Image (tube, rainbow, N blue to C red; front, side):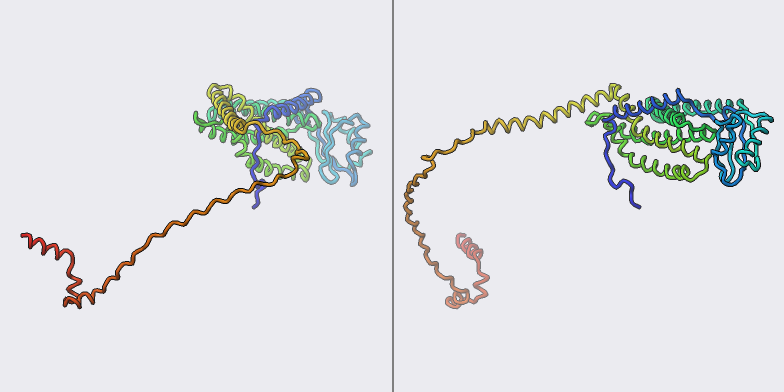
Length: 402
C-alpha cells in the first residue's frame, strides 16, 4: 500500500507561532461574534414545542407545506423532509385547537393525507438536557486537567484545555453563523469531537516529553526546537488519522438522512478544528510557556551563543583570506602603438656540454672450477670434498696447537 506522504515534510511550526496565534485569534473572534449576535437555534428538545409527522400527496414540496403554514401564522416553522412524501414539522407549543387548525390548513394547501404522529415537548425537558450537557462538559474538563497533570505536567494540561476551548468556540460559532438547529445529537457529536481533539494532543505531548527528557547541557538544541522536531515526527501520523476519520464523516454528510447530516456536520467541523489546534496551536503555546523556565532559558542562551560563535568562525577565515590576497592590481592600461611593437628576443647562449664521466673498468673475475674437476686433480672423491668444510680445518689447527 502506497503511503499518502512518500516523503516526510519538515515544517517550522514553532518558528511561525505568531502567525498561527493570529489566525486562531481571528477565527475565535468571528465565531464569538456570530454566537453573541445571532445566538444558537435550539430545537424543540431544548426550548419546547410541537413536532408533527405528516404524510402528503406525491409531489408535495417543502415550499408548499411552508406556504400552507404561513396562512395560520407559522411561516417560521421548521420543516424537514423525512423521505418520500413524509415531512417533519416543528412549531412552537400548540394546543388542541391549534393542532386542528394546522391540520385543516395542511389538507387544503399541501395535500395532507395522514398525520402519522404528534409529539409535544415541554421547555422543562430541554432545560434539563442543557443542564446535564453543561455538567458533563465541566466534569470532562476537570478529569482531563487532573489526568494530564499527573501523566505529563500541569502546563501541558493547561495548553490542552485552551485547545479544547478553542475547538468548542469554533464549532459552536459555525453553528451560530449558519443558523443550524441544535439537537441532542448535536450535543453528543460535540462531546465526541472534544475527545478526538484531546487524543491527538496527547499523542503529540507524549513525543514532546520523550524528546525533552533527552535534553542535557551538552546538547545544542532549545526546547522550541525539540517541540518542533516532535511535531514533525508525528505529523504524518496525525494527518493520516484525520483523513481516515473524515472519509466516513463526509460520506454520511452527503448521503445520510437529515438527522445523520446534522450529526456528521458537527463531527466534520470538530475534526478539522481539532487537527489544526493539536498540531498548530497547542505545541507552540507550550514551547513559549516552557521557555520562561530558567532551565530551558539557559538552554536557549547556550544555543544562541554557540550559533553566534559558529558564525564568527565562518567569517574570520574569509577575512584572513582576503587580507592575504592583498589589494587587487589596477587594470592594466592599454598599450600604446610604440609599445605594441615587439622587440626581438635576445639569443641565449647554450651551455657547453660537459665531458661524460669515465666509466669504471670492471676486471673480469676468474671462473669457479666445478667440484668434480677439483676432486679429480687431487685424488679426493666428490663426496669427501662436499663433506669437508671449514669447521674441519679449524679443528685440525686446534689440535696442532696443542
